[in-house]
Image (cartoon, rainbow, N blue to C red; front, side, top):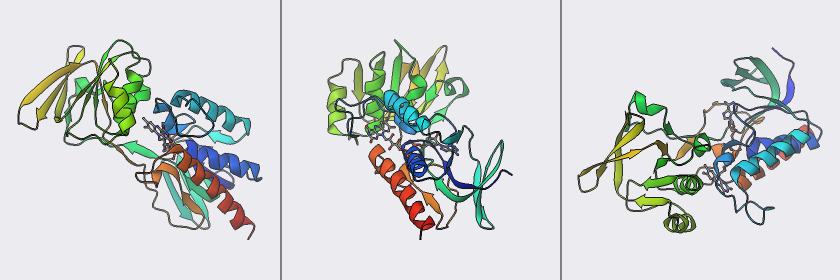
Length: 283
Ligand SMILES: Cc1cc2nc3c(=O)[nH]c(=O)nc-3n(C[C@H](O)[C@H](O)[C@H](O)COP(=O)(O)OP(=O)(O)OC[C@H]3O[C@@H](n4cnc5c(N)ncnc54)[C@H](O)[C@@H]3O)c2cc1C
């Protein structure tokens, strides 16, 4: 086991990164773990228009690249390892990755959310590798037919993003959309996006090099469509629960923010948590 650190932060999205930067500025030496890339989920955003400092808005890719630069400028210790378990034992937190066990006095869980994978939709093995849950997996795809399943903000944001280089069809299971009207209007005006209501996905199968999507409509009819890729946006749920209760354990950002999942709120959580830790240390 490595020597005990001040603070371990799991996740380097907006919540984890902002708390790490604030802690470093206050004299702590946080150790951050990230299983993918610095920046987190925001890399999927088509255009971030509600985070201050970017008067014309900013793409998620650019935002995460700038966030990464800012983070790395602070010389914060980061390891690209997935944390598989965490617990509190004899006065310290112990976190485990495949590479080792690390210990700390404080633990911040900023691991965000994971996609909801539909259990009632059959996806056969041939189709599986062309079905995705985040748009970042399709960022290099061009001139393809993409079916987006869902009717919330993410489904529409993904579609606007993909429509720059592809034809996109959005299939929503009901007649109502749960997205910002602004996104719905932009999609309606986009010649590369078609919107279908009352399409309930049943199964997705691989057909030669394409995918066949079979739907039921609310009138009981079956409909099939062909696509190159499928992107499922059926919502997100909190990432793995470490089940720790301790005043030196903090769970922050999207993971605990329910429906209020926004960069500004995650950043606020990160900074506030850093300041709380500072106060606890200086009580
Ligand atoms: C399509 C889309 C568009 C969006 N548009 C906007 C927008 O315009 N404005 C806005 O404010 N918000 C937007 N959001 C929401 C925004 O992306 C999130 O609110 C924000 O990223 C949450 O930050 P977070 O740090 O709490 O979590 P995340 O960004 O999810 O970061 C969590 C990090 O933890 C890492 N991690 C998870 N588990 C582990 C583990 N076990 N070990 C190590 N690392 C781990 C993940 O890899 C990830 O990097 C959008 C989201 C999506 C999907």
